[in-house]
Every structure is written in C-alpha cells, then in structure tokens.
Amino acid sequence: MLDQLKQRTKNLEKCKKHDFRVAVHKIEIDRIHFIICSYLRTCLHKIEQYTHCLLEREEKITDESMATISPEELRYAKEDEEVDLEEGNQHLIQYNPISHLLQNGSVALI
Image (cartoon, rainbow, N blue to C red; front, side, top):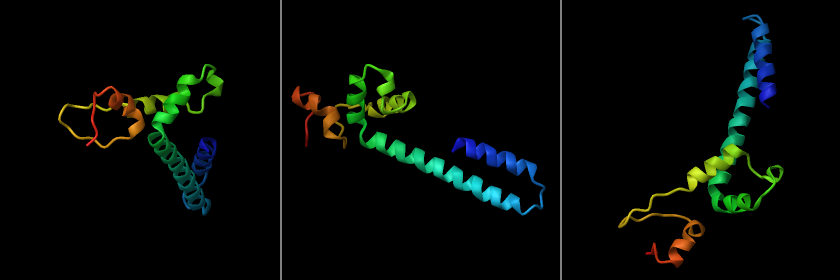
C-alpha cells in the first residue's frame, strides 16, 4: 500500500495543474491513506485488547520468524501494559494482567 501511495504521488507530480487526472490521483491518494490509517488503528486496537495474551505468546517464541507481531508492536504492547497502582487509588483493569497480584494479596478487588 505504501508503494501505491508513493506511485500515485509521483503520478500527481507529473500531471499539469489543470489536468483532470489530478483530481483522480488526489482521490486515490486519500483512499490509500485512509486504508493504511484504518489498518493501523485496527492493529493498535487489537494489541490493546489482547495485550496480555500477546505478551504471553511472544515470551514463548524462541525463533523470531515465528513472531506474530512486529518488534514495534511488541514494544507498544509492553509499554501499554504498564500501570502505576498507587495505594488508595481505584483502577479499572483487566483481570489477567493483575491476577498474580490478587493471589499474593498485593491488590484487592472492590
């Protein structure tokens, strides 16, 4: 998709200002840009929704070619996972990431 975006941009630069193809190329560039952004939003949403499961799966992988997410997505998942739990504060959080804290008594459900 990025290659298509680059190609359309090059085609747009070759066209004269009043050429009817300019409008078509601009529409095509906007469409491709929208698709890329939509795809990335969906990926981030899935990473946020399944962070714990993804991190568990990635820990078990020994061969990088078997990874299900990119290194950048893995870094995002790890950074999204961290939450500062301050004493006396209340948080809404998924059960799985803090289940071990509940079992050892470090946090409590209300």
